[in-house]
Length: 91
Image (cartoon, rainbow, N blue to C red; front, top):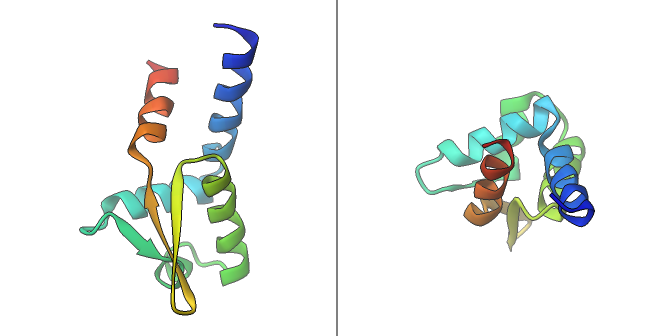
């Protein structure tokens, strides 16, 4: 693995290396529609909306989630290719 690949992989793994973020990814993945509103995720993890939004931003910045604004709420869905990348790093 090249240094650039290692740095990219480490950045991706760092984004999911948090218990709250892992729970958020798992919750979004488990939804029937494959997406979730931040308003639904706050109760799940028992944290305030700004804290949950911060964790979702980290995951979005890493490319693991896509964000879509609908009215006053943000909806998130997984990016399958990036999730596959995480699996590939650990394989």
